[in-house]
Image 1 (tube, helix red, strand yellow):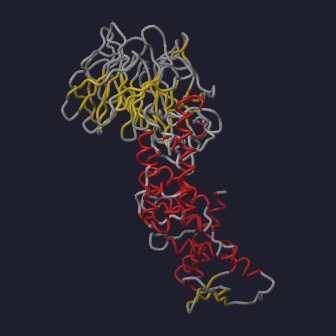
Image 2: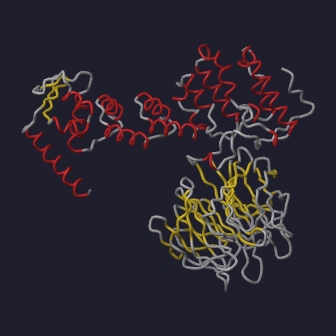
Length: 591
């Protein structure tokens, strides 16, 4: 194959030299008054248009000059050069004209090159224009990617100038989709208002078409009453009245019957698909390690068991998401202490082994920074470790970095502002309240202010620009309390306590909420999950996992094309997470 490709390239090079010298050419392509000498067989090789032109029965096979209307001479020159060289310079200035010409003359190679270029340029300001352009020229892959970009970044795209130029049908096509990435339906309603107010006389009648696309029953009662039901555009449109009544009834049913009986098939109560999925991986369950993997759908407040039975049981390990892969680092299977590392592709749902660490690490702490995975401390079966190492996916190699100040197993780590932070743990003699940070630039660890409590089996996560240390074991009790570290002041402050004590649990941030998952409460492993909102400074109950477990590890994956495989089914009875707090004194059913 390689020799054949090399010969083809040499042949094209020779023919291109002959073209440039005007030798052995058997066709002239004339655009306006400009003539291009070429070889029919070369043009036929890249374009079905030219193949049909040169071989059709109504054309004289001896014909030499062909006039081609409706094309820019510069674009024809690029097409002819591509036929010989199989390369084309795509720029911001020529991409639209070039793709249009390539589409006209059926030069699929140039169409692909233009689509690849436009995909690489996708941003908040141009994604809608590229979506429309790709749809017009029937470039399905680019059209799909631009469309997904709009859906995934809708909260910012809605402020672009291009958003204002959407047609009614295009706006409906965006806001009705399950894949629309919005944390609150308020965002969708306000985007609709912004679009209408851009041209109110022409668009105000469309509010009754757009309003049912907004999942109003997932709004808070206060927002719905004060911003939707009382909106002038809504009140002045008679067609909106039954829509509002339906939304009020859906909200009332949700409040009275409870979220567990909510019908996802009702478009007013159907949660959007999550953009981010929290994975709970492995752990200790029922007296032995488990290979169970559950995915948390935060928009629906549901766990989905996604175990494939292809991974061996593992507990007290670390998990990290990097460059589209989930890495499981170290751990313990009740017999062996692991230095092995496995990576999971959530799209193909397959596992692969990668390079092992230098040390066996059970009770390991793992964090991701600047495209690398850091594995710190742990227990190798003999001693608690102060060593740390760094994994680079590009080289598939682990490199030892500077050791920590303290031996730490059962600690926890996170990254913030370009540094790795590790807190607490157990040194073999006592539970630790110390914490330290690592700078990759200097390859040095620096002790920070100590925590207020000793914490082994702690959960540490960067949240709201601070480092949170939650729960754990202080040597006597499992803890409910939590604290947050401000790196600017080098101080810890107390934050509200969890509902339940826990150590050796999973911790992650999803949709701006801090989740704590499972763990050991001092008596048993638990499947309990709760989340903390720093805006309200309150903890909330989330849906329980299906598996009781501690010693698990969690990570968050983003923007999966197959997210529906990890989300609660939308065509069955499930529950959305949005808890509607309807005041008994607030008569919401009056319209």
